[in-house]
Length: 425
Ligand code: SF4
Picture 1 (cartoon, rainbow, N blue to C red):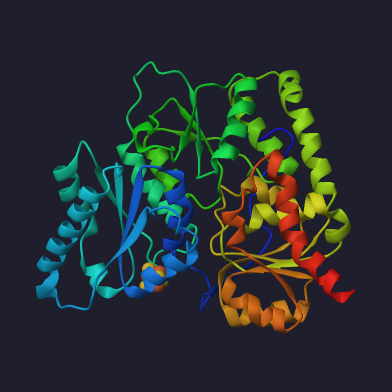
Picture 2: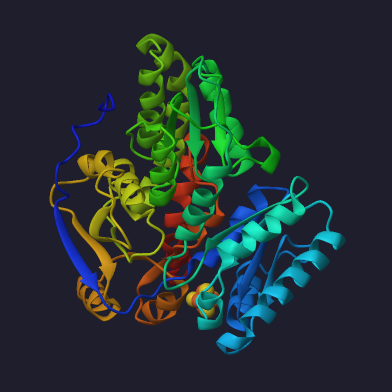
């Protein structure tokens, strides 16, 4: 199926540099920062080292007002003979936690990369604990290890773990639309209203706001990915018989319209109804975005691989704001999930997959872009060279999906350039 309004997906992405080498990117534990806000009765227990605890605490450091719904069970160095004790310790920690926090209904044991944690079979631990605490509390596990995941892939492994415990729909269930990817509640509500107006009311979200609201998944499920980094989750959904609706991602006016259109087409919504429902919101988004054209048009941008949001955001910045793309790096380019995005990029765009940070820094410095999107570790050295930067992590912590956020998304990229102009006055 192709999405009306989009060019035919490119069979092969254009000019792709594939690199392996040193990476500069957070691990998948970072996803806990937004996932724990989304699933309101879940708790994320990282089984890790002091480093993991520091990462989580500094990434989510603002959570001092409420009791946080994440913690780290610190595993110290020990030999294989100590593994049985480690399981007992974990059981004790979980017992203490669940006694103290009866609000927890879903407990994730989150694996990390210290060798002691790798030796521990967290899947068996989760099964053992689930048997003990079900039906009050379900215990699942996933990996946020820096060896296996880059920072948005923690959400992918978390959602992948949820899919097998989602219920099966009845055989005669009506077609259901599933939106996949953690969205801020306000964005979810906006999309729900739009789908309602389109007559698509059999709608569910993964992850849900409460673990008791896990959506049913089966052959009646058609799903739209809201995030481009959900490869393992999509595979798990496909295995359950669900079908992905090919679409670009809902960033900017253009991406949001094409994303909604993919569902509208699958539901047979009349073109006239679609325009009636979307036209005003799309126009508002275009006007909000246009306010930042002055700062961003013809400016050059370079993406280091970080969040996997790079391709859709590059498409938005190029097509709707007139930015010039120097290089669009991503940890991983999923040819199928990104096919509609590739088709909307300029033909001569340079894409890179994976990372060799030294080589990429050389290319970046040589091109001297007006703006670089990168992780925190690269931002300071680049700023010191007079290159303006945008931290990729902000793209996950700020609502940027959909029509109503399109202007905010543009503003995120304009902000470093506006600040530079102010400092120059
Ligand atoms: S999981 Fe690995 S990369 Fe992530 S904080 Fe822990 S030790 Fe560091």
